[in-house]
Image 1 (cartoon, rainbow, N blue to C red):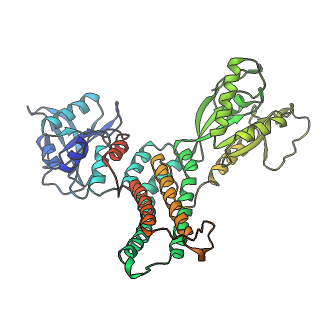
Image 2 (spheres, one colour):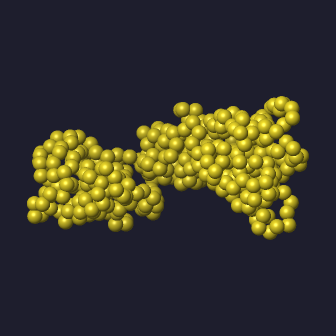
Image 3 (cartoon, helix red, strand yellow):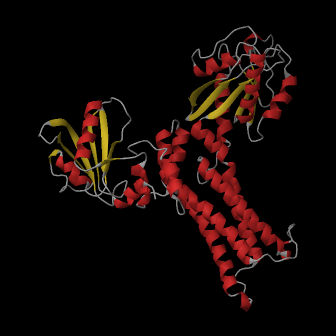
Length: 470
């Protein structure tokens, strides 16, 4: 066991500044662990915090060993187990001076605290049963959320809805494994506790749920990190102008000279609570310029990784031949938006085809329609309010591994279940202990997501990504 997990169990008091580094009006120091309230009381001049009721705030002064006042502040007391960490905890609000923050932590360390490691408060909340691992990770996602959509997903996961659904799946798998293992115990008596057809049907249902979860990861990760939108097309189609118009600032250089944009430019924008990563790309054309060709190659890479591709068309040029090249690079789960630019210079009013948007990136015509279409493209890929969505790469990997194990279960059940008319029927009954082993593997991977099954390495990796003080 590593040092941090050992100290979590020992419940030693730890301290850190929980607010972001730098100068602000207010900074908050958090102290947690056995004896935390007594330690703060040593440097606190005011109402005795040891005798204070839990969940109460008190005004007072922080003083050093010589009785000199460092600052006036407010101490909020949370007594175990009714605190974030499940331990005695005090949060002290002070003025945001860097000197005051640093001196306060020094006073706390001198009084018996230890400086907290990254994510150690949340890790203690997990160790003490206040949060499961998935909910703990949602805390970090909540802090990092930069859009309404990302925040909403983090809130649902932090409240435990996500973990409860995963636990339900895990419990169903545990029941299946228990029935199979019970049969093994009574194998000599030829007792069947559950038909293999029924087991197979349940396994198929769980497999479908796992596949649905896995398929939600692309959308979930995009919302969490910003939905990647590649703006592609021929040189001078107006890609850089469109980027500038959507951002409402002159971010990209605009020039009538073909090949001006030779590398990708990325900027973020929030539209109706969803963060988009707009990617201006090099114009697609045949060129002998080595540098420009490198930019075009990067464009093709961005197309393959984008959730949404805006194919920007200059109606004064024949660009239909480019569509096949673009669509071949697009992920089947991504959205292609066909956008015809330069409506301001068309001699006749544009004829709006199905799934085609007409705009003028130069004067802003049709931009609101494009913005709404971008939002709609994301919303249609979201699950319902009661459905789960995966945003964490660690969770995704575990779900894929669990689905692989369940697929092996189904394959083995097919081999010995002729009444299911299964394509994998071989007439050879696969041993129940082999099937139970695959079920246990699936149970293990799902348990690793919530922390029901975990290792020191997993915990160290997860909590090392947190900031100090959280």
